Length: 102
Image (tube, rainbow, N blue to C red; front, side):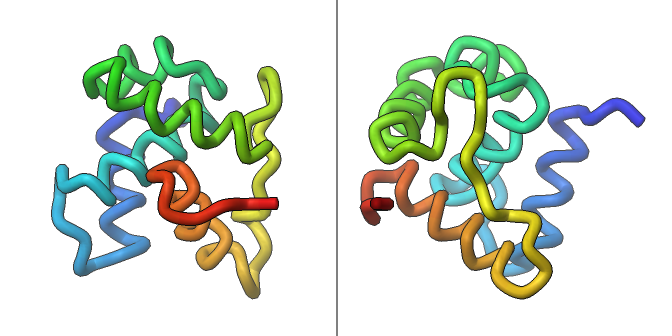
């Protein structure tokens, strides 16, 4: 199954039923998940999502400086059954510059 931007948006809505579609937090979550599909590359993510490059780049810079994005790899703990969802939303806060990951 090919992962499309529509599928990613559906997944974000499943993860948080109260999130505002296309709001700032929604877009951040879509950007993070898109990194799994096209890699941690701001230009590729902007093209894939249709979001402005400058918006993606702001988040990408935070993800890189925190070590969540390392070169072409993602250092994420989102797939842990117990704490994966918490880790994902914390990484969204890091991407938005609201939380530091050390």
